[in-house]
Image (cartoon, rainbow, N blue to C red):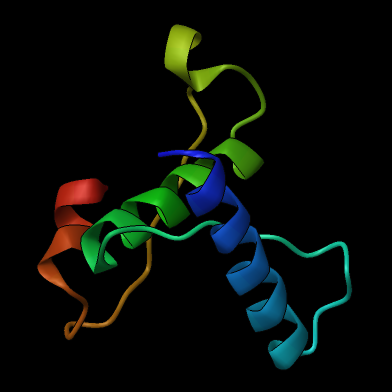
Length: 79
């Protein structure tokens, strides 16, 4: 929650992206755990697929989340 942690997050996400093989335009964020990471991923996916401001207007698009039976319980809660 401060300048030092923001800089460290940038270094770690840049290093991770490079190791995975992404170019320098890749970025990311770090979360405190898997549940928050899954929720963040679902919010990012919805923002990408929902055509307008879902926070203020809602949407009528049919969106789906497809996971296996072994998916973590937080996926149901986040969806």
